[in-house]
Image 1 (cartoon, rainbow over the protein chains, first blue to last red):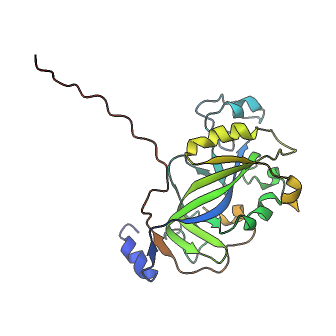
Image 2 (tube, rainbow over the protein chains, first blue to last red):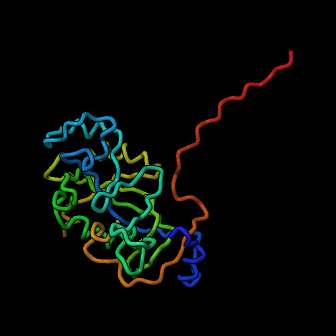
Image 3 (cartoon, rainbow over the protein chains, first blue to last red):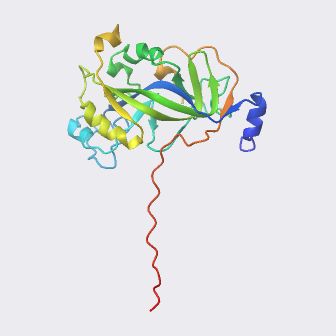
Length: 203
Length: 45
């Protein structure tokens, strides 16, 4: 793969290219759980007493490193692009037309809302952690990109704008949206708290 | 990364051939580089 150049890929894609990132919509979650990884990458500054799942809210609030998560265990780094990797370890560049790999985003937030709130926060946490907040936003997509009729999957991505709904989940710990916003400001993009009626989202 | 399942239960629709985007501007707000130390200036006596 190391011998494959951008020119080679362009040749395979009909030579189509652009200098403007695609802008899509997607969702992230912020969660904590019985170990530091399911938590919010707290190992640097927080006492490790997650082994029995008894960590208190204190640890979340005072962690300086709340981060965005997606997929199963995908952490979105701050001030650094996320690069897609194929979890099947196939020898191709993500996104590949014959695979499901790549970083996904939709053209419209309307495509996102139903899946975003369909299940309970805890059920939606793939890593079995506890979702403390759900975040929506715009995301820039670039590198190798595959366009679909409803969205994209891309090689590189970084948040462009973040929206924190004022939804308090009935189960699991609560972190005020203002607190989440402070942490997400480290991404260096606009962060807004939006008033959202949960009944509307679940309709 | 298999993001499809996280974003939604449905896919992104009918897909086209891949293409390349090389942004003219960096989409990532990188950390500001550390300020250069003030250089010592030799002042003639």
